[in-house]
Image (cartoon, rainbow, N blue to C red; front, side, top):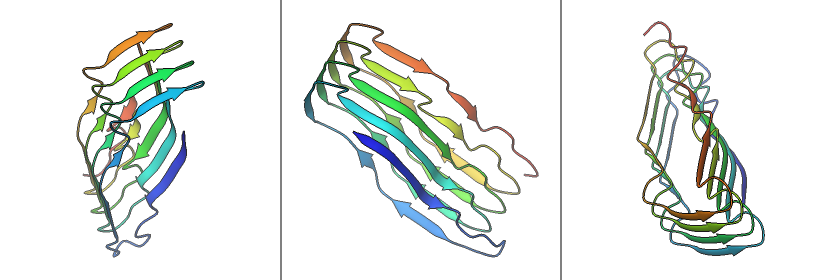
Length: 168
């Protein structure tokens, strides 16, 4: 159960002349064998990545992956709630670069949802001004084998991607 991973590369370079940078690799939950009386893999609130950046600040990270897992669950197999505010409130010449978000090649047996994705990517590259830029790889849910008591794959609210951009 991952609960609230946030504030990575947050409020960087509060003055226009600043040139702060944040770099990290992947976040991976791969090749696990999970048997759970609750949710199998629960990823809850991953947000504020490259948020509120000014000047020549930059944020760069690899992929977020949950691939190749075998999950048996008495609830939801793979539960993702609110991955968002990535590359949000960017000003000046700030840049946000991120790899893909992947939920691929999992084998899931669940009594409720197989894969539950609510706000799985929300508010990405939104509210950008000046020459700021945000680039992100693919959002993938591929090659999963699911046996579930409810929806196999449930997705709600893919929104505010590349919205409210000014002056560029």
